[in-house]
Image (cartoon, rainbow, N blue to C red; front, side, top):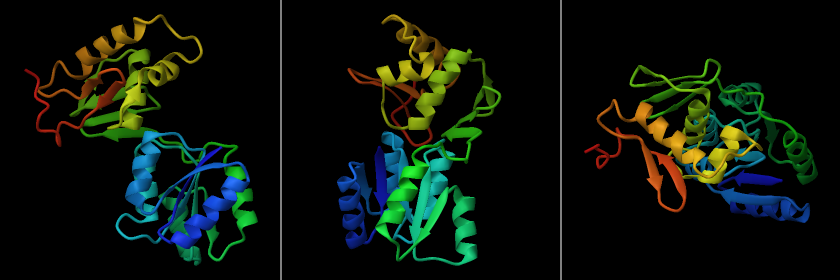
Length: 231
C-alpha cells in the first residue's frame, strides 16, 4: 500500500509516518495542499490522508483540485474542525472519510486499510486541462469548444495524459491504460500518438502534446506556455 500524508504539523506528520512504516505501509509526506496536488498527480497512491487547515492551499481546496483533475483516490480528512458543517464541507469537497483530532493512531490505520480496498465514491465524469474537456461517460473530448473526432483508443490515451498533466506519462503507463494486459507491438503506440496529434493539435495554432525524449509524453497548457507555437 502507498499512502500520502499531508499535514503542516511536523509532530503529527512524523508520528503518523512512523506508525505507517511499522505497519509495513509505504508513505510519502507533504506539508501543504500545493505539494499534495503535485505529488498525487505525478504518482499513484492508494489513500491520501489530508489535513484541512494548512497555510496556502488548504486541504479542502487540494481535494477539490484532485477531483477536478480526475483523481479517484480515497481521501481521508484529518482535522481539528469537528462540527457537522465542517464534515459536510469535507464530504462535499470530495472526501471519503473524516477523522477529527485528537485521534487514536490505531483508528487512523484501520480507516486507511479500509479505504485502500476501494476506489473513491466520488466518480469523476469530466476531466479538464487548459482548453481541453473530456466527457468520460460519452467518450467525447473538446478543445476550445470544438469536438475532437477520436477513436476509443485515442480517447483512452488522451484521458491518461490529461489525468497526469502536466507531468510526463511514460510509454509503458500509456500502453497499460490503453491496452491493458494485451500489450501491442512496439510501434503501435507511436502510430496512435501520431494520429492523436493530428486530431488534437493540427487544426490549432498551438500544440499541447509533447514528446519527452527517452521518457514518454506530456500535455502542456498553451494558454500558459508561451514557447509552444507550431511552426
